[in-house]
Image (cartoon, rainbow, N blue to C red):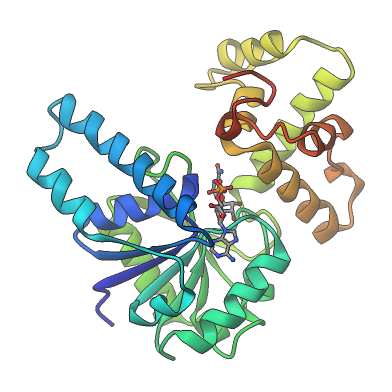
Length: 282
Ligand SMILES: NC(=O)c1ccc[n+]([C@@H]2O[C@H](COP(=O)([O-])OP(=O)(O)OC[C@H]3O[C@@H](n4cnc5c(N)ncnc54)[C@H](O)[C@@H]3O)[C@@H](O)[C@H]2O)c1
């Protein structure tokens, strides 16, 4: 099926990035969030990124205007009835996502693929909320979406070959490189990345090193472009905690237990870069 109108649920850091990339590839985009102020913040973020591209001479101002013109803001889930393909990028919380998929299943046409940008929740569990599990798939973009080349495509047990092919081709259309992962908690990316970040938080918790020393060791010793604590701040500490909880619950293995210090920061509302304070202050 040809995808002309692309629906995005959630206008946060990921949803905004996905909407931008889809609009830049020429698709009409509907970007939905629960409140107008969240959709407006998402649009402002996209406009600021595009303005920088124009300033640097990487994009013509007419192109910027056309890209922005293709993104339609929405606060009513019913608007998604017009979408030919959907990516859900709402908060990493099972209750929220399960309800969204039940609602979207009744709103969207039966042939529409419902994908999720979830970092860790098994696609099979999400698909089981709908009457179309063959059309449910993981389309896991990386942060920041316009910059990062990877899309991890996650096939659930019930995902059809046609759904897989359409999602793979769409990733290529967005200028990304897809990689296939099978459906286990955390898939490939966060199965490997998040325990490393969690261990870095344990190092801080146990006083093995300061935040700066922990990040310096990983940057200069392992050649990572940024340290794990700075990366946790970029991802969002609430998202990191939610992913660790999913790994811990999904595998019933204590090696995935979230560090108490990570939980303490999230409980204090220190969520990282997105709200000004995490392991570092912004
Ligand atoms: N942050 C990352 O680095 C990263 C990377 C890859 C994937 N993800 C995944 O992407 C998803 C979104 O993460 P984020 O970092 O953008 O979070 P975020 O907190 O920046 O944004 C989440 C947005 O979802 C909205 N939302 C919540 N419930 C909703 C609903 N019922 N309907 C519509 N919108 C709703 C919130 O209002 C918020 O604007 C999560 O599943 C996360 O695991 C995050």
